[in-house]
Image 1 (tube, rainbow, N blue to C red):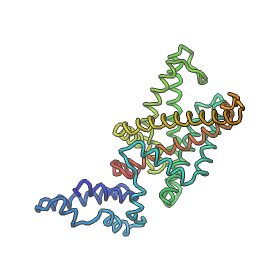
Image 2: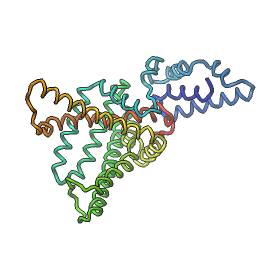
Image 3: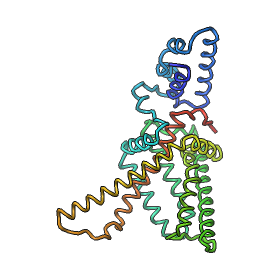
Image 4: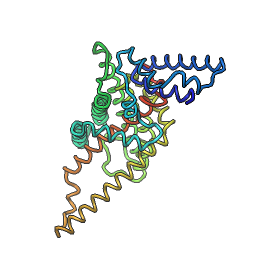
Length: 330
C-alpha cells in the first residue's frame, strides 16, 4: 500500500465526521508521510508501521461522538464512484431497505404530478412538489442506510435554512422551466405563453432533450448537497457542476443502462401479454395500456428510483469518494 491508497481509505472511513475535521486529519497524516520519507523510509514501510487505515479510523472515531465503522460495515457502506451501473444497483439496494415507504413516496409524487399536469400552473408547482418529494426521499434514504437521523443542530435555525435553500432551488428550477418553455415557443413560432404544448414538434422535442441533458444534469447533485450537507444554493451548484464534469461518463452510463432496462421491461411486458393471450385465447384490448393504474404504478416506481439515483451518485462521490473533503459546512 502506498501513501495515496492509505490516505484514500482513511478518508473514506472517516466520512461520517465533519468535512473540515477530516481535512485536518488527512493533512496531519500527509505531514507524517512527508517527514517519514524525508528520513529515508519508503511509503510502503511507513504504511505498514501505521497499520490498517480502518483500525486507525476506528480509534479516531472512538474519540468522537460518531459510531465507529467496522470493516464489514465499511465494505457494505462504500459505493463505487467509477461505475455508473453500481449507482443504479446502489439505488435499488437502498429502495429494498424500505420498499413500502419509498413506493408510498413515489405514489404521492406521481399522483401530485399527474394532478398538477392537468392545471395551468404546472410549470410553477411541479418544481416545488419535486423538490419536497426529493428532500423526503433523500432524508429517508440517509436514515435507512446509515441508521442515523440528519443532524440539523440543537435548534431549528439550521433546518429552516435548509428548507429555504431547497425552496429557493425550486424557484430557480421554475424560472429555468419558464425559460425553456419560452425558447420552445420561439422555436415553434408561437407567441410566448405559460401553457405547455401537449404534442411538441420535432425541433421542440430535440431542444427539450438537449436542455434536460445539460441544465438538468448539471444541477443533478444540487438538491442532495443542500438537504444532506447544508450547502448554500450557489455552493451546491458549483459542486454539482464540478462533479458532473468530472463524472460525466458514469452519468451517461446511467442513462444508457436505464434505457436498456426500460426496453427490457417493455419487451418482457409484451411477451407476458402475448403468452396470456395464447393460453386464454382472449385478446386483451389495446386500451389496457392506457389505464390510469399502470400510469400511476410506473410513475411511482420510476419517481422513487429516479430520485434515489442522485442520492447514490452523491454517496459515491461526496460521501465515500474523491470529493468528500471538498464539501464545506456552511
